[in-house]
Length: 422
Image 1: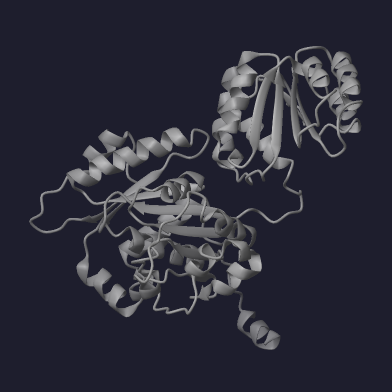
Image 2: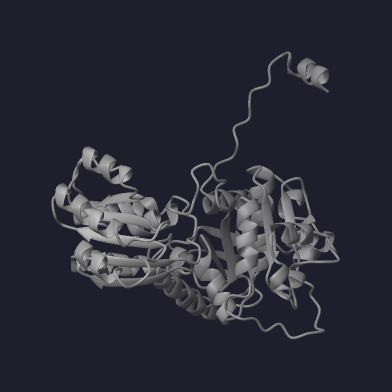
């Protein structure tokens, strides 16, 4: 619906920032053509086309508004989505849409951007088959939300949230952090989650969860034609009631070189059925790791307190912040802090370099982490009340944007009622 009053540029920007907290389903492979009248709107549409959720959409922008659109489609088929900007009054918009309807192919969805804030105009546009009406000035996220929303049914299940965890340097414990966060999300938030181990050669998720599944992510990535929801579901190994594992083979019998979009179908299948997907992204810089990070909903960088980690963490942070302008900024945490006799860079220096504080500072506790690793357990299984387990719970809540489920107070008759129900 139109807003109560015409938004200013500042209000549109503020709305973009607020909108980052909502979950927007990515657009499918569709063609989108925009006909703009102002440079500002054209820039907003261009920025929307560069958003990760519009990565599959093919966007083309022209100037000229409704008149140019009607002329263009007299001799050419219409795309899946047409975005039209008009600064004219409502009657002129309706007249222009009537002309466009004469050359518009059935099934094409139309989004109109106008300056007239009128409920009656909105209703008339809907009656004519317009899919959405936006009031200018618009921001990039307004366009992303509108286009992506055209292909999300109102009663559809929410799209799963992808959380990518990667290390600023090898050996900083990013996999351990990722697995413990996923375990906390599943156990403490009662949210179905899948750990996806992307380190096919040396992945440790199977060891950490004491699992040795016969199949895993390799079967999916090397058989892209077979990937669908049912196929991926058969590859999952169940760890707990709410946690499953898509394990890496951890063998060296083949070379694991992948195309940039090699894991895209797997992630899409997981999104369709699982509320939360935690990616254990190995520390390497390739097209597919870069794309996996950019396409994630939330990112956690794990760093140890030394100079190389500081440099790498800043490089990764700055790159992802620039590549994802309409998303949350990446988060980072410091791990293995407090190693005896080791000179360390302080958290304040990390915060100064990255211009943001770490979301957690995980202390160096070799006995606790060593026992968990050797037993194939998570920290919370070793000691649920330990401060480090509390940190992982906090990270799980932060990255999912959720809080712990409310527990109903047990009444005096609760044991009797439960017994009768059984």
